Length: 257
Image (cartoon, rainbow, N blue to C red):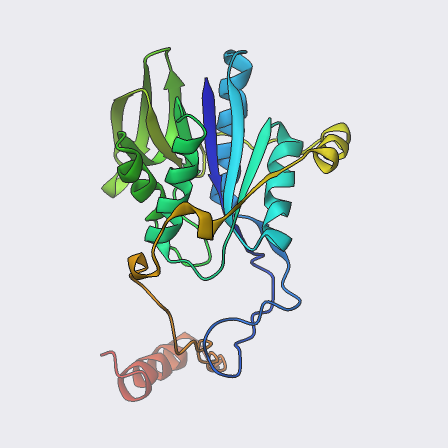
């Protein structure tokens, strides 16, 4: 029984982002890369599933430049994943990433369960998990905050609009994309970290998967940093004077009233 966890390596939220001179993307030099936070919940849920099902194996899989992408796999292995696969690739869009992940999962014999984070915090597209499921032709659901499994199916609770909850049952095999609150991801233990360093990670070249360049639908250009925020304007005086000054600023400067 195989459980695959799809991972992505993203820039740490505290990293100072710089744009390349030709505005074709971000300058990756000096960036601290980490596991996508939503993927941490997916890894934890996969390990919890394995703990309840001793015959299960957890496979961590990612796509990206293998020189750095393997680190996110080492983290998953240190947390408790059994095996790891890196698809060595550059500059993929969501659909080619999903197709590559699905092809490798199929080549490894398929999965009883595929887990992923609901989105990656670098581009916020929330699209790769659903696309992977479509390529695998399996049911899927996202934004999941509660997960229960039986040998044949999965029952999940997902967050919907307006603070409501939906309960969905999916027959195995299926893909579930995790939301914050699904669980509390464990820290990697020192023995786990040492074992992960010695683990052999399977490497697959994107070029061997038979995905044509024409299948990429999206390319990015013209990257710009957000404009600097204007300085804060401090209103002085008593409450009446501050209220009058605020109204004038909203009407004449911000022009919102």
